[in-house]
Image 1 (cartoon, each protein chain N blue to C red):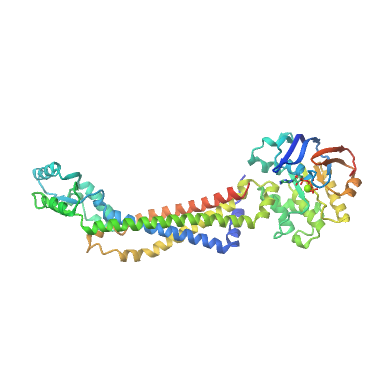
Image 2: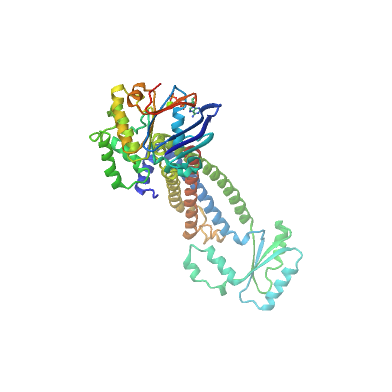
Amino acid sequence: MIKLDNVTKVYKGDVVALRNASVEIAKSEFVFLVGPSGSGKSTFIRLLNKDQTPSAGRIFVAGKDIGELSSWKVPYLRRNIGTVYQDFKLLANKTVGENVAFALEVIGRPRHVIQTQVPAILDLVGLGNKAGNFPHELSGGEQQRVSIARAFVNRPLILLADEPTGNLDPATSVGIMQLLDKINKTGTTVIMATHDRGIVDRMRRRVIELDRGEIVRDQVRGVYE
Amino acid sequence: MAIKVDYVVRETSTNLFRNLSITLASILTVMVSLFLLGMALTVNLGVNKATQRWQGGIEFIVFINPGATTEQVGAVDKALRESPEVEKLTYVDQNQAMEEFRSLFANQPELIDTVTPDILPPSYRVVPLNKSSDTVEALSEQYRGKPGVKSVVSATETIKLVQKLSGTLTVFMYVVAGVLLGASILLVLNTIRMAMYARRREIEVMKLVGATNWFIRVPFMTEGLVQGVIGAGLAIGLLVLFRPFYERIVPDPTQFPLFSGMVPASSELFGIYVVLAFIGCVIGTIGAGVAVTRFLDV
Ligand SMILES: Nc1ncnc2c1ncn2[C@@H]1O[C@H](COP(=O)(O)OP(=O)(O)OP(=O)(O)O)[C@@H](O)[C@H]1O
Ligand SMILES: [Mg+2]
């Protein structure tokens, strides 16, 4: 599903965020990216949906070299990759339902699809009764569920999550992890960057550890360190 | 992928109203610049028409009697051609005279209907070598009263003055209009840029979930286009309102034949309006186009 072939990312000012990273991730795997702050986790994730481009090396998503993707095709790549961030990125002036519908609307999905998909996904994330609420009327955990619903409503092959529990308390985080696990069980590949030792140790999934841009550990059913 | 019309309409109108004051500023600038341009074009058109017989250094015209004999015409023709003081000579036959008449009185079709080519005099348009008024006067005098010559009309100082004044005036108006057009492009650009800034979170989410670049751009492009079109529409409206005043300023052509043609016909004005509407669209599109390619980063 995903393959990094000797990928290096150097930002301007000679910051090496990723160095000679090679890794393969199979379909429906669940992978944790761990490592200290600045080790390159977010960079790893940004390279996968072509928010950033590698300085060297090649990246394959679903068998395609995304380095060869012309810029007008990048949106179509992103339709197959859901993305969740620590800060939710919800639109404050839209309700929960509208936030999710927006993601379908702007990729040109017909109205009847939107009308059936949005309630279904909100039920899946456990917010079936909050469709008419605005984000500020929701708890942090609920807001993150909305952002997961938005990322998953188009049924992407891959879900990228950059510290999705970073702003949440441990109990709420457990709920979010159960949701991501549920999504993973539908066959979606999930890649999650995290600092949350408790979660990683409890879930026992594949762990890729980065340190100053290098992959220093790749462990099945791994632990935080 | 088809971009939904209702989506574009909704996004464009919220954008337009979100920054109402700066949107108005750019619409009004488009309006003023196109109004000035329209005025300049109208005056220019009128003056060109009224003085078209006198363009290219023509100093006097020898009108031939429509009933003159071939010999008489031949004599005048020969005299003009052989004169060392004539630099350039143009013969306007009756059909060409009819064409000229038609354009001169385009806004008085009832007048055109009463005229046929055979009653219009053919004429010689003369560009003399020496253009000082004394020599022109002396030269034209030679043909006055010759057999077959109906009349000799020389470009009076008034015509020269009108040409010169209107030339200077319209150049000035074109320059001001040009500067204002540049300003309106910049204003549209900045309005769109502000609209994009106001919607940066939406844009970020759109990129995240895979909206195409054109999907993101189109509402902003139409916003620019709408500003240009509204500005042009207002300018055209102003010109229509202003037309009676303009016609009143121009001296009555029945008393001053010189000014016949100064008031453009409706069809000619319509041409000017089309040009203004087109320029309005171009301003909006350029302003918005630069804004989305420079600042949208998609
Ligand atoms: N857009 C950018 N431009 C320049 N340098 C960047 C950029 N993004 C990240 N970096 C640098 O690249 C390195 C890796 O950053 P990255 O965000 O990938 O780390 P991270 O592992 O996600 O850290 P954290 O755990 O704090 O989120 C850091 O030194 C960072 O300063
Ligand atoms: Mg990070």
